[in-house]
Length: 418
Image (cartoon, rainbow, N blue to C red; front, side, top):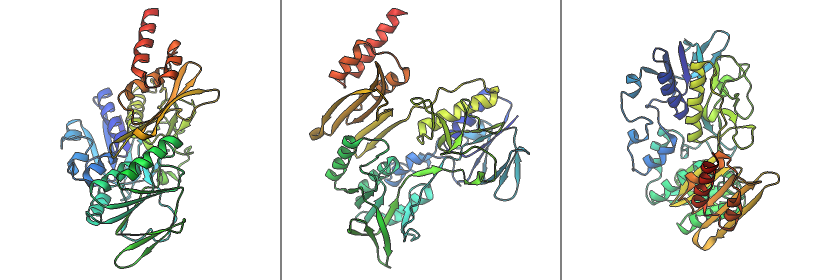
């Protein structure tokens, strides 16, 4: 059996390793377009600040990890898939045959249609090569404008502050990380960043980027303009599926997969940021572009590739945990609430603290937090278990931070009734 994986990110690596466990004799080939060993984009900010060397971004530390696991790593770019012929077409014109195929190509950055984006001093922070160019441009004292304050943007943001640049952030949404945080939580994060010396504009867009030999001039739609030595664009991502344009495969927001992570084409699976899989909270499908989901997707897909679809996936929990300049924010599940839900909330803006719990009947279905991070694992567990809270629901509504007590109480009650 020849398993071919297009991609070399967290989903791909997790899948390859799981395949080796399940099929000791199978041939496993992983196709990665980057020149380096498979690495984590989440580690790039640490590379930018000098906390880790390039090798510190690698998903596996040992230089012979893939060789020792008999996983062939091919450096190349997939340009098409011939499903009828069971082949992957590569950029050099060669073809690679497969028995089972996993598409784990991740995401690619969205570049807004703004004049001036083609200036070499305008950078995305997506590849290690991008980071290397930014290191040259964003020296201490440099003026930087970051376009976008979503999840990835707020991870990158810390790097600029630690590099001691003069930073301005422009976010078109009504608050920072609008797809993760509600109004109160997002505004607390904005106030926190401002207290650290960052200028933040929300509900604002970049009209144009003017270029001169010595500097850039970033013009905003509110009439303000900021001179800059470097502009970093972090305006979101989209599934990297352009190479599948000639393939008859179902693609919505991402590649549609079933409960086995199989696509609409037999023997072809998808995982990670390019896949639109089952959402645990809603029962519908969604793209959850976060690394924990990617690795989970990869292992589930690999299990079904090796065992003829023996494992039905329960779906991924939409969750994000973000540390921005020391302030931890999080969202879990249906954090905006569901039909017929009720909630509990604590809001302490002077101490940058906020927690909002969402309930459906007596089950915890979602949460949003700022400054509370002691029991995030417990919070996730209560949501994923869908355990009836009973009397603990009212206790949590009175004291939303009493998560550990509720978890212990519910667990003991369940054990006692078993």
